[in-house]
Length: 309
Image (cartoon, rainbow, N blue to C red; front, side, top):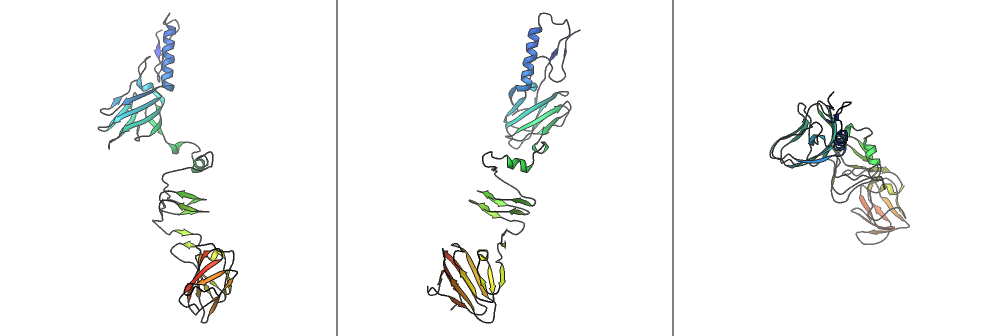
């Protein structure tokens, strides 16, 4: 009985009693073919024409390599084929420059897949078609898993662009570019953009006090201000007290006198300069008047308003 050849890798299958005296040579050839199939690499220029890869019986063949690197600048649409009937795994590197053209890798009769310029691809042939294995097909490839394993030292992952199309919850987002979301971007802590913009192109941009273009208004009677009042309008009907060791430089509170009489704005262990005269004293805010209190240093404030005395 004569030798035959395997379907996929075209290894020589020697029959009993066949090839007397040459078994060693033929076995070494088979081992080299197996080595090419599991570790072989070949760069193939596909710039100027389609390429039909070959899988020849018992001889080194370009279609048998594990890794194929397609190279060159495409001068037109290009197709690389392997013979039908081969069952094999491939790593495909698209090292070409597409120049507006496409590069397809497929079996002769199959449809295959379109390569992505500059990317590597996992694919397998089932004998009929070449099938691309993409990231979304991999098991346990969830966003949680990606983020958990993004950096072994600090648990972070760095990306150049994130597109948010649905509700997303996180602790802290830091970017050197633009944060934009077509839906909802929610964080339990801070969003910081050090060199770019934060945009909400399809809705409002909110912080812990609400929509940032709206100043929250809080109705209150007699009140000692708290740090949560920063950035708010206190619609007061009683005495307002500015306490010590509460506010930091740059924080502001606006007072609206929502009564038909005067209300007092008093200090408690703080300095409060009147912007009009520079005097440090308690102030009286006339009916329907508005005053803004700005913290300029630890326990030091400036108050301004058109109806203050």
